[in-house]
Length: 176
Figure 1: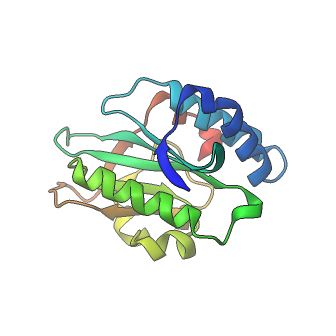
Figure 2: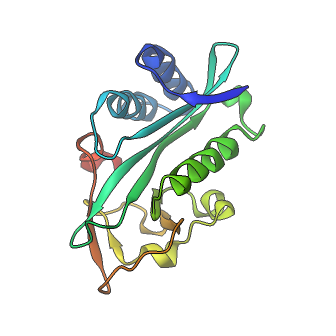
Figure 3: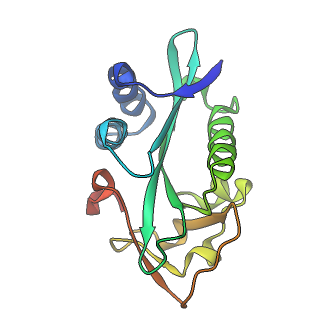
């Protein structure tokens, strides 16, 4: 298995992956997000990665840039979405995608990664909910305890709280 950048021709595989990995209608919505992020032009570039096993997409992750109001010099990303085929879960694919993305972004000079997800899972990778409390997401959170951050490279962020803005694909209250 290899981690590689997702490509436009992965679109059907990504939608199928999310449809299969997420319950009910959530898979369709999150799959559309993954596909939208793949085609959206962002600056810096959104990192969309797949775990490829002989041409079969077994997992996917995306890191899209966010801006922090008043801190244009801080390079921040949000990890969303992430999925692994249900028949491949528990094999370290999600962990490998997260670790690969962290190394890639850190090497590229990124300062922060934010995520909105299960603290028990993301905490294993160093994400911290308390540290994220100062970053105000674009929409109210249904599960505020799931908002977490990880510092990759030191940076200075002034103020007790700062607002973030995400890329157009994530600018939908339904994801939050």
